[in-house]
Length: 266
Picture 1 (spheres, helix red, strand yellow):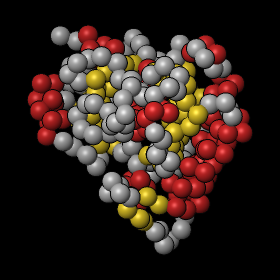
Picture 2: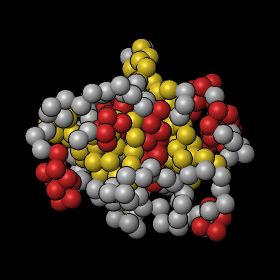
Picture 3: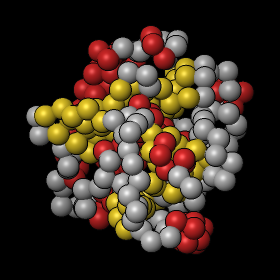
Picture 4: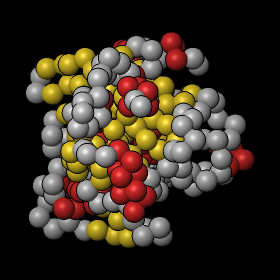
């Protein structure tokens, strides 16, 4: 499969699946007694994570039965098997579980298509915000919100004298603080989940520096959207493209997500 073999019609199928997963999440979100369990890596998991996982996996299996699937909620796949995958789905059924538990609405459904190490298509759906971001590399990126669809294109973005930096609500690391010292004067916005990438793709922020641990399913869908909108996600400090399924460990290196203009600035 090449980038050009995944069509916008197929992408809309993924949008539909993501929205269905969002409905499953919202059914749990509406409950007054939210049960939270802790996984072996000390991260929280709820019935919403599992419900969303089931909706996505079943939907992908029905529509794309020939493509392998890796989910945060079913990630125990041997490297010996996974390293041979040329194309697969990488999903985070509920990105921002901590935000979900806080009930602040800043959580997303993330579905990405990975081909030869690149996130070539992705959908990020925030059900509380009614925002669905989606894109295909080489085709474009879009935001569907309140019945309207907006094209996302930051390829010509110009960095302002006081840049806007977006960061995590739950994870501000000392390394990020050090990086921001090199940026100089800036405006800082905080938001949960993969919405940080999407704010850059929308042009609401100039840069998202993530100098802390993330897993590959945390970033893939939103990276596809941002890069389809004309942005870049680069490992830091190497400034090489962030890739997937290149090693047994599924943790990402540090990275910077931004418009191309950010990396060209003096």
